[in-house]
Image 1: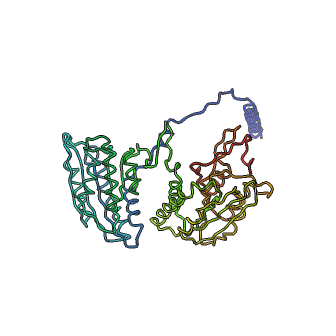
Image 2 (image 1 turned 135 degrees about the vertical axis):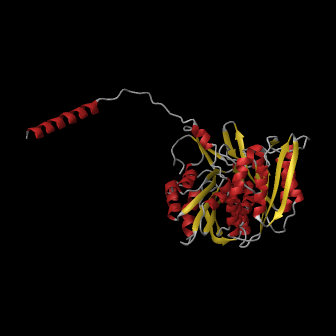
Image 3 (image 1 turned 90 degrees about the vertical axis):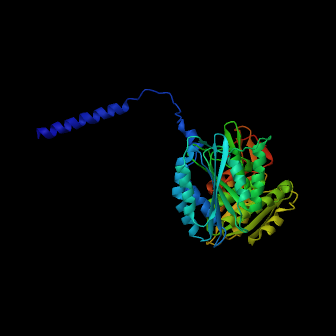
Length: 466
């Protein structure tokens, strides 16, 4: 009995001590923002995997036809710092081959290696072969002939030599894969040599239906060559920063040149949609048909062509539709014309053209137009809002941004926006709140229309204009 009493007493003492401790406030400390110095570095780097890069190129090469013909040319930098990367390439060739052979048995490989020995350029050709072991053996030979005198050669010259000296099959898009851990150089000595040889490379690629891919370093020429030939850039190691030909840099900010062009935005939206791997999809443009859009209609038509090219390359099952909207000047009643899928691209472009004189009411178009689409359950719905104006007020109809977003979500729509700008003077915010929010909440993307009209307001809040 005494032992139980002792235990209870000990418990009371312990509880009392804890309560007293809980009531003691810790000393005040200054709030500090801890910055991980590696965060910025992580944001600017990408995961590097030569094997995965090769497989991705193989998937793109076999995507267009049921039984495609595949021609691949490796352009390999054979300098002494490339030994490890060449060993990985040699090992991962079989993985690339496995991807190709799931779609076709009609494929060829070729290889061009380049290096510099005591300042003199050297190139080695291994012409077309049906046996990938020949390429493996050539890579093994490069590694076995390692010499400390060997430096990185002239990669741009090697690409030109490959384009000039190899024969190309008609109707086949050939994949050039340039693999280097050095910047691209040329032996040309005239002014603007790198720009001039790059122009020649692009011209030869277009003549021979060649897509140029780089597993390389973050430099402008590699980014631009892949972009202009519809190829793709991959990092050779994790120290590289993500690059493509559409990137521009101003101080610490890296922006996308596509943000400056309407057709570039259409292509970016198409690429993002394809990466999400949708099933069957209905793509409906919610198109501002007011007169302010007159200068944007032809770029939008060009953008539609670029969008279609991306969809066809990806083998996407898509259909087009359009919701056009405009209103009489001075806040008149909205006119909303819904044309449900399927439409041919040329029909859509015709509907982009000849905009009407007047205003526009985006919320009306969404709230009244989207339910009329009646998309079937077996197809995904994608809305692409195209306007150069901010979202106008329609309080008299009880239309709000929240209601419009609910309509989009109820239709299971993913929403992309190429939209207008609202600059709110007091808060300094930039962009249109509804247009940003509807893209964000439906897992789409939001862009600002190049040349969009800026609307200035003097009050804050997300729905003041709605």
